[in-house]
Image (cartoon, rainbow, N blue to C red; front, side, top):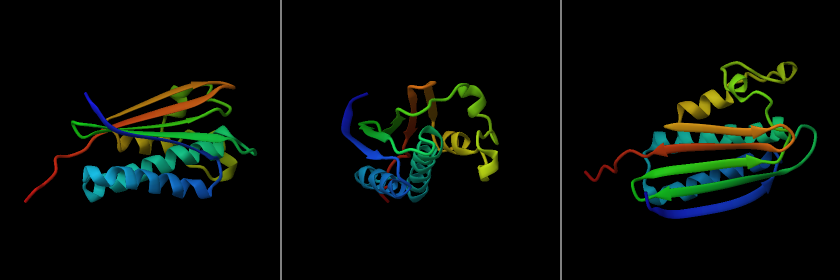
Length: 146
């Protein structure tokens, strides 16, 4: 699978940068001509991933979030969101719907479930004290030229 485009950026784990990440994904995807639903889904997925970094990885501190976007010639899109925060002790448990480490803060625990629903493949790697890397892969639908 031949890569046709890539962008990498790093930003601080500030809440206003969640919107920035959504805009970066939109701008990157537009030349691939995704349908409206795909674009909305992937914007939502990056929002969930970045919010997880802000709220969970860097609790009560500011750290760096890395966003890498890749496009491949077969209309496959890959998004990698990484942090160097606290890490996740049990990834399998964290991926269960409704699981949250912050129940007192009205968190619903659906971030990974949402990301997974908007992807063909979701991979989560994490080490306690080292950080987390989330990789979302999605094959975009065929372009309708009618």
